[in-house]
Image (cartoon, rainbow, N blue to C red):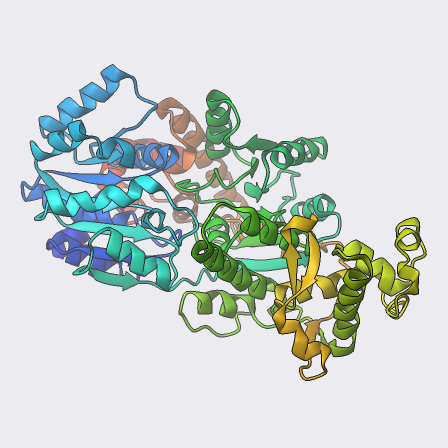
Length: 615
């Protein structure tokens, strides 16, 4: 363990492990298998990088990291190379000659850590290569991809149990940021990790503020949010990610934001590879870029200063929501998770499950996961408590989510629920088919429009009985009825609504219903405590320190450009801020700055001291 701490300090520049990192490193370095569940930004990569380097020093060969994403490999290898680790990756971006050169280096024992895609790893040729070299460990990143019950199943991951069969003496560490109990069990089963020690860190990300708003012109709401919370005094925007469900919506949203003066870029799997790669690199290397993307973007992105993640469409599960929002605030500074959510989202997700080709068992699991997410959206209590409970962790009201900061009002909606359910029943009985929420609301509010009159629905006993409530209020009621499972989406009826068995006790008066009261969405108010200010690493700096900070950032930009890596690979903002405040005047002073490993001190130390001293 003492050697692991020395590696942590010498190579990565940190004085101590965080949380369970030390226990995990010690267990794996000693040759034990493990399953690690740790939130994004919790330092998962160190849990296999350090044991691998320690075991390599013992003559046990290279560490092999299985990763499903090109972006992750490139980021990790660039960062490791900067601190003096001989790291490489094998993926589809390399030419045949480049791949052959890396394989040759592996055979010659010239690589410390090799990142490889699961598809390449599982080829007979590559497995035979591994059998001819020394391997000190296998790290299986994004291990939830092995689970058919998870939110990002990838068939090629199932075959990874072969590592246990062909390399029984090589320790394996599987890592993921999100896995409920069912997914954990499948990871253990699929990867043959029955004897592995399981480490579960807290899923809490206290620096992230969770906010879910009623959808009412979502684009305008998004723009208000960005301008109020994530636009700095100089007019620049924080880095952020906006998730949309469809490729078309991604492109339209990016174009619209650009028209509003936001530096927005689109990203989805349907784009030409070169353009997609360019956009990803710009997001990672430039400041103030907002990426509008499908969930094809984000996994493996190590950018530490993403200040917000916004959802314009409902994700499929709590795991998906947690992982996507977890890409904000990896540096530990304040960040926002913002989502606009409405009845159409609920209907769309229900319909997607019903129309999928999955078997009934999978559909039930998907429905259960969606129900859990809807429960998070509709809760009137602390969102963080609800989120943590999903992963089996107890929490206390956080004071840093919308329901804690502005507790929503609730009301007894039993009578209105009975009106709505009765309207669904009577409209169906009168016409022989089902209707969507818009038509049902027109009936309840007594709207004598053409469609109502054509179908004779002005004669229904429920016509006009809900005139006291506005259309948005009724829409909120129907949304919550679908979320509560009292109404279901008829996938054959273009999103129309039908009664469920659970609705019968309510119709008969045997069950009361409490709902969140509808509140007209208000514009996000600009405040002095906006996230961009709370997350500013220069807060409280004197003018002299600020000038030092600006010079250090300019130096970092040039150095990163020269090395062809994102700026944060050279140094994180937190490290530069420490230097700017401390004004070190010797290499020994610099050595004690967090994030300043031996290789970086050796390579950059004199340059940094020159920048600091140029006053």
